[in-house]
Structures are given as structure tokens and as C-alpha cells.
Image 1: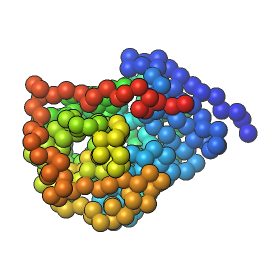
Image 2: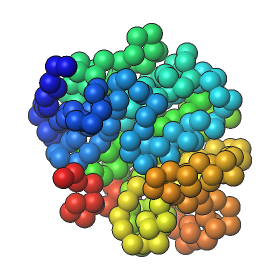
Image 3: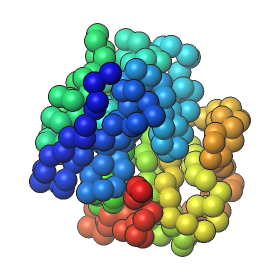
Length: 281
């Protein structure tokens, strides 16, 4: 077997590095300035290593009947982990992937080739600009996993942005976002309030330790105009290696209470993670 070696590139956004996993033959970790961004196994695209990615995958499994192709817009590309996952689990899906870091995108596409026959179109562009130009009612799902370094950019956190997402989604569509915060959850609660102002149903998925304020971590926001299968989602997330809680309904309303929707002029990025929160050994 040919020994795989790390590859890296310095882009306008930082130092991007692809590092092979010594335990899985064709698996790679993508980092930006040392912070893990994505993990992908080219031989087993259904394998989702990161817990937040598994939670997004659970939602993607439940948004439509198993195997049904979807039209998906991914805001944030990383190593194109979820587009590969959907190409494997929902063959025939049409997917646009928007990544602002063109150097990162070029590195990933060159060294981690996309599966043959998959309808995955990568685009080097700003997430919000692409969303604002996208046709109405053109997506079944929007997946937002946008980080500038380790922070969610301010311009994709406002009510105006949320309304653009709603416009692009079909009536039965689902919006998913990977967010990050810690107690007292000023950012996370404001994001829930923002999407609550636009969508009828919200779900939050996070580890209990994060929700109890014990540590900084990821949280998955899900928004739609129809009820989500929270019972199945709860079972699936509870069975993960790092179990998560699924919050919805009155409990989530209590969590949001007092938070206001974010307007463009007051939008701020997600908080800076504490040292080591997303680092690797």
C-alpha cells in the first residue's frame, strides 16, 4: 500500500491541511489553522466520524423516505463529507456545494475525488450571496455548516438570511445548521429566536454536557414548516457513541425565552472557542 502523506495549502482563510487517518486506509481529516473541519472516508462515505456530522446525517435520513433523491444546497463545503454521504444514501440527489475558501475547495477536489456519477457541483462563492441569487422553491434541504476559522460568520445569522433560506426551500423543505456556543448561550438562543421568527417548527440537537453549560460545543439547529420526527431522531441520537438530546416544543421555547431575532445591523459571529475546544492532539 502506498504511504499517504499530508498535503497543505495556505489560502486567504488560513492554512488548510489534509491528513490521512492511519487507522482507515483512505480516510482523511481536514483542518484549517489546526482546527478540525471535516473527516471523510473515500471507501465508506456513509461513515460520519464527527458527532455533529452524525447528527446532521440522522436528520438527512429522516427528511424523506429512505433512498429518495433530494435537491440539496450545502452552504460550507469542508471535505464534502455530507454531499458524499447523500450521494451514497440517496443516489440521484442533485447537490450544490458553496464554499468561500476557493483554495480549500480546489485542494479537496484534487486530492479527495468525488464519487463517479454523483451529481455534486462545487462552487467557490460566499454562502449568503449564493443563497440570495438562488431560485425560489429550488431546494428540499439546506445544510449550513459555515465557519470562518472556528466561528460562524455574522452575515449568515440574521432574520434576512433566514428568510432567504425559507424562500429557496420548497414548502416541505428543511433547514439544518451546525452552530457552536457555550453557556449562557447568547449566540445559540439568538439563532433559535431568529429562525423561530421565520419557521413554524424548530429542533435543537446537542450533547447534554453542552446544554447544561459544562463545556463549549456544537449544536445542530433544524427548522421547517412541518413537524419533524423527533421520536425517531431522539432514538438515533441517543444511540450514538456520544449521545445527544433532542429539544423541541415547550422545552425549547423555554430555552429561547427572552432572546430576540437578530437583525443584519446587529449580527455578530459565534463566540471564539476556548483554547483546545476544537483542537487535535
